[in-house]
Length: 214
Image (cartoon, rainbow, N blue to C red; front, side):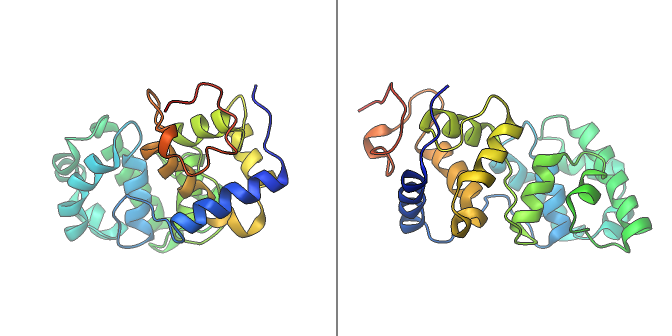
């Protein structure tokens, strides 16, 4: 396994990320905490672009748990049928909407444990919501972050939990809030899976990846 970048290298990397994009944003469209939960849950094994196309009309008419329940599972399924695993996801969205109404007064809870108790909401989804909506320094590790972390030495680890801890333990505190967004965007557009664009990489001088491209 590649070594972990040291403190000074980490500061240099994230200073460079910050200079390039001071306020990185997630690409899933949402209007409130509930629609963010739904959008992230729908994005499993799907692209953000595909989810956004499906949810624009949906969120215009069902942007609260109560409205989603009023819409119903059959109509919801019609809205999201272009997304992978849409039937199971529709069932989960209806179930989590009912729980939010019954147990949380229609509000999205702000603790990881409560979020993970919702159907279809795993640790990654919970961390996205905690970070993006509640502004907690939670790190949602997806395939992009796992790849970037292990290639570069920013946050190497054998599984997503180890990578998540590596970010939390080693990224300087002032960069924690935006760390996962910078890493996701870097993996999506620069450090791509098949042919990373090392020639235009802003952090190439610190990256430990041995098979750099031009």
